[in-house]
Amino acid sequence: MRISDFVVRDAVVSSLQSTDKEGVIRELVSGLNHCGSIKDSDVEDIIRAVLKREMLGSTGIGEGIAIPHTKHTGVDKLLGSVGVSQTGVNFGSRDGAPVFVFVLIISPVDQPVVHLRALETVSRVLRDEKLVKSLREASTTGQLFDHLEQYVK
Amino acid sequence: MRTSNGVFAVVATEISKKVLINNPSGFHMRPKAAFVEAASKFDSDVKLVWSGQAFNGKSMFELMLVAAPQGDEIELFVQGSDAPEAFEHLEKILAEVEPSQE
Image 1 (cartoon, rainbow over the protein chains, first blue to last red):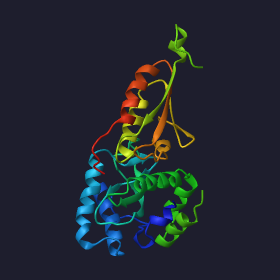
Image 2: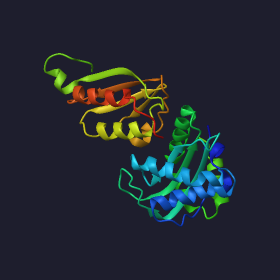
Image 3: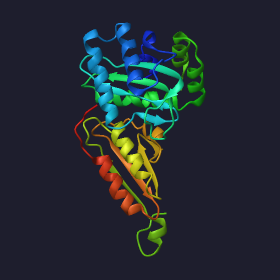
Image 4: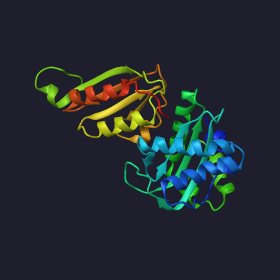
């Protein structure tokens, strides 16, 4: 599995405006809605589900990275988006550091293996400090996605 | 060094066991976070072996690479002065079945 297989190019946000957790999640889910990947009627419920998951423990895994996620009946295939914050967002990460790179994952409810592999794939990619640096420096969504698409490891 | 007798056990206890993943969601992010948090409280070295690869049990980033679904086995290795206590605790987290909320 490659990260560019499920991250939707047109949903990527190279410069997040939000400065808090809910705002970031809202921006990322809205991005997937605006490009037609999720229905209008599912937007609020997906935002709620992702926030509910955060209540159980932050998906900030450290090193400035967070992987907010949920499983939802509104998707029939794995969907992802990436957002970059220039200022950093307090996401309640276990290392206490602000988060700059977010990867949102929404999986179908009946595919636990796909969900696990998506999180593994994202973590593998974001362990590469050089790639993370290039994502943070990308000035357009196209550039940001190209970095992900060209990443091979 | 694998030893379980006498005073040497205190300094060099290593315990290992294959643990079956029972959780319908697999070994997903929440149990991973609980595992790392618990493992970090012990002095012992903690290692997980899955799919032929070894992962540091005290690193969330490394455990994120363990995509073990329900029915897979993960081998847990604990070595150090507090290994028995650590092992008991960590095995429980690995084998736990909790309702999926993700």
